[in-house]
View 1: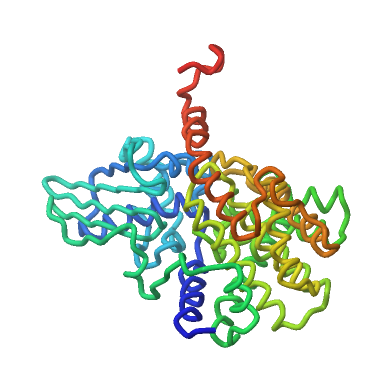
View 2 (view 1 turned 90 degrees about the vertical axis):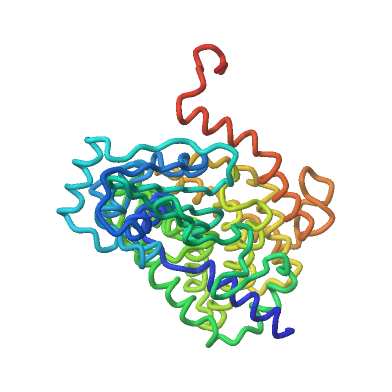
Length: 433
């Protein structure tokens, strides 16, 4: 593989596979708030947060980690101000103390934080403004959960960068250069020394939070229920493992995970079913690592066409990646790996995202189930054919088509879901505003 292409794939993994504590949307708000306080240099008297609809949607129903069960934008922002460590980025709330949690609860009740919907902005948009007397500081995040695009102090811009560019990061990437063919070649040939730390950390952290979800009571206990009702075969374990991680994460568990495409749920979905199948098949560690490289990159490749946040549930793209990796583990060839992706999105492509909350675990279980069926079909050289619904002439075009549906076709769906969630739809009048 040409050196620059190889490095690009490696940089994609380094950018996407980072540890995060709790659901990434409330964490991003906490991070922006903590950074704004650090810029201000003092404890503020108030904070105002403006967010895109997708951020509001993904924060409304999820528990903020290390918050003693608090939910919502106000709790996330205030906890970031009171106890957040901006230098820790997506682990900003890792060192919050009980005293800081109590202080946050008091400030929530006092109206310390106000929040509003920012319209006409990117799907992932957060602006946190803190004030004390005549002094203020504002931090804006766009497109990625820790990608600060502007910092303003006392009305003066002290930092700015282009929010559409990813070449200004420490490990610049160009996702337009990604192809399924290139991903397959990279996964099969990558020097494992280059990815060992990333992959081993994903295995360790994501397995630990899955264990936590299976042992204790979080959310609707989807993972535990699957094992209790359907037994302990590898297919059930693969679904239950991923679902249990989401049970814990959406339920406010403070344990970190390695994310994918900015999402902890997607990070667990691309990894835990693959880990479970690798253990069942007794494959060498090297093959597991290459399978996880494949799964992670296939998920990112699909998401680049959809965008960070949309009405399209990211569990589907992540599960398609996991299913493709499971096909690889079972000795499937490149065509069968591609067919697994097509079979998955042809089945469950278009599951709607209605925010981060307990039911994410159920959607993950459903998506993984579809991916496992897709893998079984492909291993028998069976597939949905071009022209059947959204299936296009080949896997690459099908991925682009599904991205178009998620990014463009479901845009209005996203708006209507948000309106329903924030009570701007009168269902008693047939849905009229």
